[in-house]
Image 1 (tube, rainbow, N blue to C red):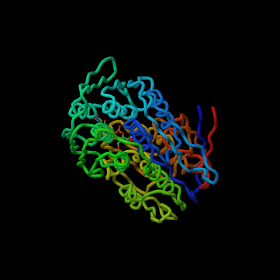
Image 2: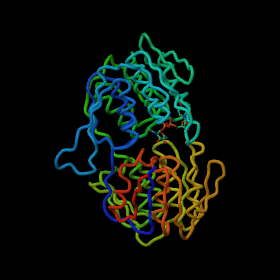
Image 3: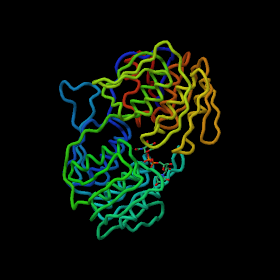
Image 4: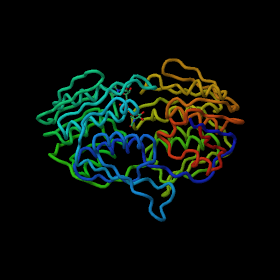
Length: 429
Ligand code: UD1
């Protein structure tokens, strides 16, 4: 298993290109199941999760081609992917694939809407809480599907097609909103989704489905209205930039000090996180090329933050913010309201010398003068990158184990950071 070795202490200076958003690319690829024509996606990031979803879709009989690099393309340009779901040969998504990546459960919406049936494995346990799929199933039931659970599989059937309905989610769920939008796009009649997720990735997917001939309104607000259409066609769509990758590198710069341009980043996708960074003492400026983050001289100020659905502070940046606050001049409080048990980074940050106390869903972080390098273990995607941020500012060497978690969501992390002066390298095996 690969490891990452970091010797901390260097400021970051230079340019980091921001990749396409993982959390948009995955549902966009799944939306390719909605049509028998070609869906072309541009700016798809090169990530382990994307490669795994390619395999999962391949299992349903979908042809996916990834265009090679063109002369003159820069090394970080995203991939262009053509998804061809003309024939769906298999409507079963098996356990051994779905259990590796939760988001693959979302194939249930388009498979059911287009084929009238789907058999999808329950995703199973997950490192960051129980993460059930009840909202997805309730939404599909509301649209007229018959749902049965048998031997760890969800069997969904709608032999006469789905029918538009009113769906009112008891709690904001990104995934269930994707499922409801995709299924309702091919249902008969009007669907209203209340308490819908407002995340930019939901908007990106809805915009893509509209480019395919869908009729979705209100994406980005809590009420989404969908008029179902009998069929969707092919389209070309460019994946929006990754706001979580953007926020992660912004926090890394705030942590180490320095001056970095996050090229291609869109500030409007992460206002709340940028406000927090400014409170912490970083300077954030917006330009045509992206976002510039600077911290020179001044120390890190403590902050109080609660995670919340968009446009609130994202849970996917909670661990990274915690890493930053470990070196603040004072005491910070971070409350996690989206996922129980998303604090696995706490023990590992403590190995670098952080002082963090957990009380239910709130962490109290008492800033320390310095962190010290140590061997640490990556536990999930966002937790592992928080260890990278900690290690970049720690004195001496840190070795991060189990870095396959990082490869799921961060494209060429060590290349991007070392180009800005970090002492970071991947050790194979
Ligand atoms: C997505 C993101 C993930 C992010 C999360 C919250 C992708 C690929 N993943 O995950 O990175 O951390 O949104 O912003 O986009 N819930 C239920 N029942 C359900 C569904 C969800 O109780 O049927 C609960 C979950 O346990 C959680 C909350 O709702 O407490 C929000 O989860 P959700 O928004 O659905 O997360 P994901 O879509 O899985």
